[in-house]
Amino acid sequence: MAEYSPQQIEKRWRLFWQKQKTFQVNLKKAKKPYYNLMMFPYPSAEGLHVGNVYAFTGSDIHGRFMRMRGFDVFEPMGFDAFGIHSENFAIKKGIHPKILIQKNVNKFREQLKSLGCLFDWKHEVDTTKPDYYKWTQWLFLQLFKAGLAYRKKAPVDWCLSCKTVLADEQVISGKCERCDSEVVQKEAEQWFLRITKYAEKLLKNLKTIDWSERTKLAQKNWIGKSEGALLKFPILNSKFSIKVFTTRPDTLFGCTYLVLSPEYPLIGNWKLEIENWDEAQNYIKKSKRKTELERTELAREKTGVELKGIKAINPANNEEIPVFAADYVLASYGTGAIMAVPAHDQRDFDFAKKYNLPIKIVVDGKGYLIGSGKFDGMFWDKARWEITKFVGGKKLLITISAIG
Figure 1 (cartoon, rainbow, N blue to C red):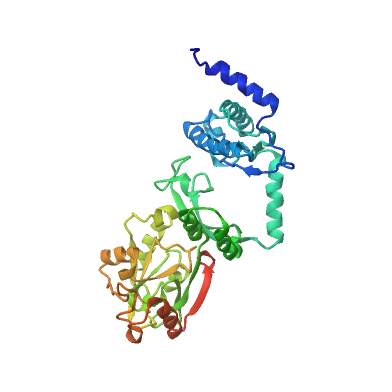
Figure 2 (tube, rainbow, N blue to C red):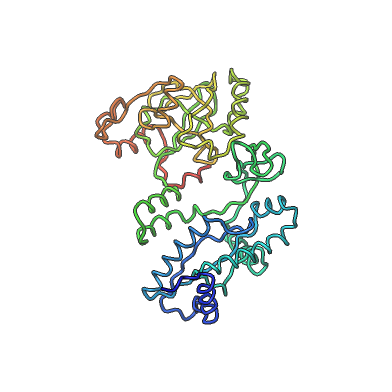
């Protein structure tokens, strides 16, 4: 039996496939087109790593399977060559990125071709090429003209040394992955795309997609369309009130405290009223050094500070309840404030146990209200709208991140 020699055999077949244009697809004439896309690698290293090969091989196997079923499989490949990864590698090597990245692209391309995947190199993508990024610019202009691109201020992770915005993944233990300097959160004006306008359509069309229920649920959560109520909590002896969006207004009688994001604008108006102002400001400053991922990590112990001297009024029972600032609440989510019902929310329960706050059960195991005044015995789904009406709230069907 002849010994298998990959250097000889694979090279020969690779040249044959290239000459015959085996993996090229005529996109205009394809009778059964199938788009098999995988992530374009960052050419920010000397070459591919094993994770790249692992991912591409699995995706290519699927592409080959579809090809055997008679589909015209289009498998594009390219290089995500812009961004901080490439910039960091160029700085590390001391070579201009225009020179270094092109060298890396050539190396990556040769390695990718040696894998023998179905890549159609006639349609190679390189994000640094003007004939590519002119279309991203064109697309952005169309979004802008249609009113779907807009600017507003929002918290960002900011490296004080590099003087640049960082993604959460580029912040390691509160420090910049590039220079190891401290990262803080600050407000910056930036561009946003108004994808919330299409939330209803996206949710509706999920029903027509052949995806697993688990994947569809993840998409629903990402889209963030929620049915709930906007409620007002008056502040004791003040003209101000705190607006809260909740999907469970039926649990309002069980709300025993409010939690504000550290960036909540009203906090700055209460300097004279907050008895522990210095303590609160110190906590807020520390919170702004954390990334959103750090702040919302479910397994992380919840921290906060009571704004002593500030009391809210629960509109359902007129009880005075304390107000906290806590970093697990984000300014960009909902109204930047939540009503805490520790008996019916794990996060609120953990926080209440830590700070010795009341825990009131207001929905029994079968979904009927208890401890909720005249609403006792009513099923939760009906009660949430009756209670919303009772306290003068507003029923909403919205994308949570879109509340002003």
